[in-house]
Length: 217
Image (cartoon, rainbow, N blue to C red; front, side, top):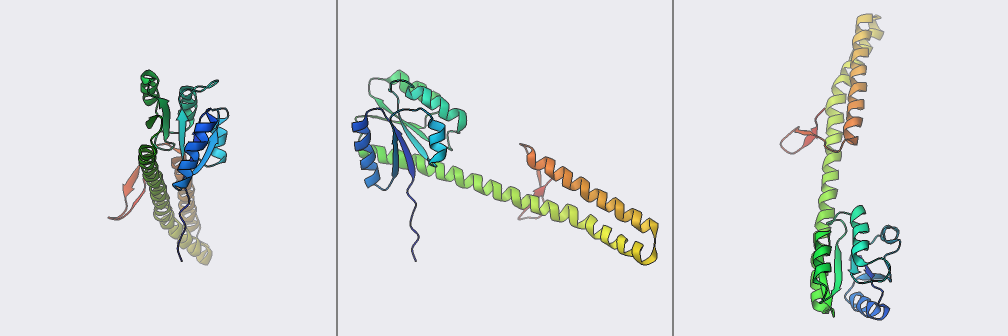
């Protein structure tokens, strides 16, 4: 049983509908899922609604310019998370330099050479995929560290609490009940601390074993 590869979703923003359609059709023939817009209005809503993975953005457009649209995109998405390739006429070097300084990943000169376009699009898609995979791995590692921290920091006092609880019940020993209560309070403190850590931007970890880490409580 073979698994089909889901085509990458690209948004092409260009007010020149004829050239936009031609370029989009050529990309679709190469296996990309291309959506088109003739302006940058509501660009963020469109990107999120359609799960866009890359934007091809014309610099020269009426209304919102490509530079203005790029600023809007970069205010929401990091450079590696949402690649933006500017599409530009050859006689706009200042706009191109400005776009690159504002976070554009690359550019394509007009008229567009399809082979060059495919190479640059493919490069940026691969970089984005590596970035997304790295984020997933970081989240997976963070979850593993959280689980280990729970197991290590909670299981020990829980064992103590249950042990002293059993002694207290069997012998009606208030000292044992008190020690059980102390262990339960420790568990409550650990849970509170872990909750605070998971909300923090910088989470410190410590080695638990040669293969794994845990949250530093």
